[in-house]
Amino acid sequence: MATAIQMPSVQSTVSDEEWNARVDLAAAYRLVALYGWDDIIFTHLSVRVPGPEHHFLINPYNLMFEEITASSLVKIDIHGNAVGDTPYITNPAGFVIHSAIHMAREDAKAVVHLHTPYGQAVSAMEFGLLPHTQTAMAVYHDIAYHDYEGIATDLEERERLVADIGTKKAMILRNHGTLTVGETVADAFMRMYILERACEAQVHMLSAGRENLNAPPQGTPEKVKGQSSGEGMTMLNRMLAWPALLRKLDRIDPSFRN
Image (cartoon, rainbow, N blue to C red; front, side, top):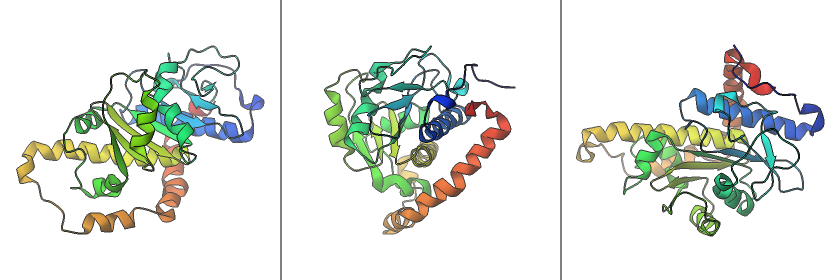
């Protein structure tokens, strides 16, 4: 049974590049819902529209993530305002975090930001993410931290967000949640998948008490960093994992492609 809100397709009115970006972003929203990472209608995933304009795609503010389709995504400018006609509302304030990183980082074409219980739990831990599992070691070296400043509606916070993330590809927003960036939606989503799995494992392992944890042998976090970085891992995500996830969605409900 289709879960999407029905609306006319916009495929014929946009470029092939934009349509492909729409399909990938809609898929990412569906996957976030599928894995239980959504927060009703809150949080955002965004992607830069290919082309010279500073335009982005983001979710309609009033749709659940499992309802989102390629055509229902809203095109917005750097201020979070809709570009062109749309039957949906958007949340300009919610784009503060995304706009800061999109504009500061050419490689941050896609941004994923979540409020999962596990991500929030680790964000509230003074020591942050521990390199105590293989999954954590795969992202540990690439994580930045940003201190909590309240709900992200203050435009001045953008400068501090950009300074804190620097060149990293993942960030733990203290007392708030998690964030990842990527050259593609696939990159950002797969990076978030690893980060969220690492946070989940950490919450479970700390139930034994931090004094009972087994630290990895010296040098192994650095070894895993080398093994999980570079073009090989990027191609694995884009060419193998992401297509597999799209096939999974197609089996469950292909309406995200509408």
